[in-house]
Image (cartoon, rainbow, N blue to C red; front, side, top):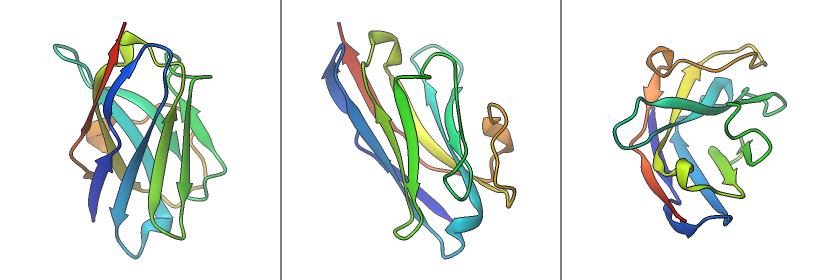
Length: 127
């Protein structure tokens, strides 16, 4: 399984970006997907997760109400729509997959517990 994130860039505070994660596997539908981020000098943190069906999601408190995670299982893509971006959202964002058939997300996911990880895409929010 290979994951590739894209869509990062430089945006002004209050702006929006949409990140995309392409997943190369025929069994994509059974994976629970998540976005994580790591800001310079800080620990990697959970951002958002989505169940295999796309019906259930969970967000970190810092992004809830501003970010939306979604997926299109027909074309093996996961999205992270980020609105009202703030300078503190500046980070390297990466996607990860977990082999998980349960159609739920009931809390933040642990990066080290995921099964597959992709390289990140850098998001920079200027004030």
